[in-house]
Length: 401
Image (cartoon, rainbow, N blue to C red; front, top):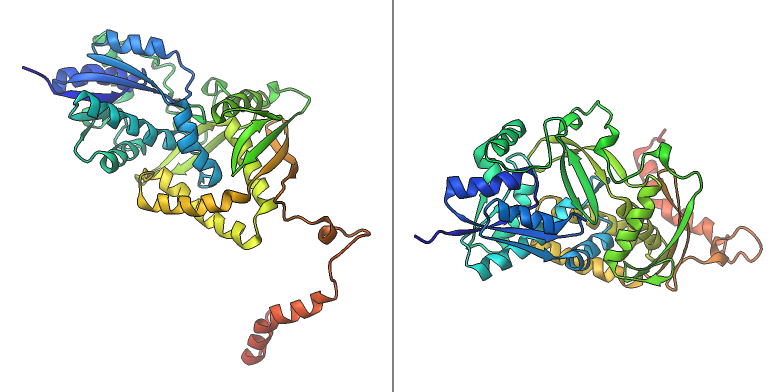
């Protein structure tokens, strides 16, 4: 009897490795293991061989590095997207990208199901499943880690019993998600929000006491709000991010330790390493301050907060996100220019910026000779600006303290 097929988002980690065997034995499905290359830097050929050894009827590796950067990250950069002002959207953005590819593979392979290894109290289950609903409502989703209810120790024991090679042990229990835009780490001692993360939890960003004692300067060039060159050399966005990851990480930049408000209603302590993202987002935001009018810049911040929530909440394929993109894209028409940054001891500091669309006027800003500002206009401006408050004070008959 012909079995139904399931396309599994396969990372080679403990959950999805156990998941291959579980989907075969408990669900009676033929598993197509799909690994999407989003710049995680792993040995993907080895991951593919591992899926084959576990009994997947087919294992696929899809190179989506440029797709992820050009169709997802570029939009997040233009929106200065950071959830709760600190969380860089790596995992939350790569999930819809992975689902888009999963759906394409499922349709080509005639699969009835797609599957993911997210747990019942994580955000990723929402991102996988809502994205799938938006793109392919005919497909059914299996969330096996949510169904089996095993603890991490029980998963490790299951893996040992079934001879499944896994990358974690009880002594090294971290759950990691990695892509070119960032790395997230949870589990183990990190579940105690009072405990300082041990150095072995962070494999990307250099500890501050080991960083160089001399600063390093870089120049980012933006066009329409997206980086197009690093130190004067034009390159693909993926290449810029990859190079900046190495440079910024060496200087201890991009490590965040935070307690975030998950969509499912709980607070979660995780650490994030996003060296290039920290540099690029800071540079982009600074360049906007040079070219956008005050009203446009202030209103865009309201849009950015909602946009970031949509990404975090798994609503990338929503109508609202598309509408907000139209506003953001229009705002980026003037975001062209260069930003010079100093990288030193965990800090990425903007030390210079210039743009052909700059609204900055030296003649208006200077306090030295050449001052072009009409100081005599200030008295009348203040009188009109403060008039409503003056009238309010007279009517109410009292002075504010």
